Image (cartoon, rainbow, N blue to C red; front, side, top):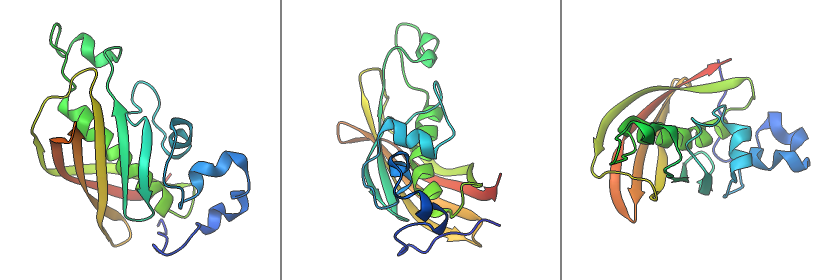
Length: 175
């Protein structure tokens, strides 16, 4: 069973030995901004399915705010929809889940633990997201139940306008 860290723990025990390494910056839970390279150290996703370009704010054990720069060169826009490209809603939800994953991966005390996206609830889409938009996703931890399930509240905005919101559920397991 995965062990979760106390919110007040400055560094996960499994990561203390790596704290002085220049490659371990993304593993430091007090770092509030993460680059793409640092996000790739935390999440298993890669192009074309890594949907977070940068984390601009991070509060350990509580929330993260991530950015996705939406470009016409992404493969989904070839068919969704020709002549009127719109980011699919499922990819907006996945992008929010990946931001949530940044919070969860830094709460788990071992690199052998992982989170799996388990469900969505109360998701609503309010506006379209199109190439050229910058999607800003805020994901906050609501609760962890039985140290195995996490629930998070997520919002996605473009130009300070709400485009999607909902609750995301995760299973915390071992690889």
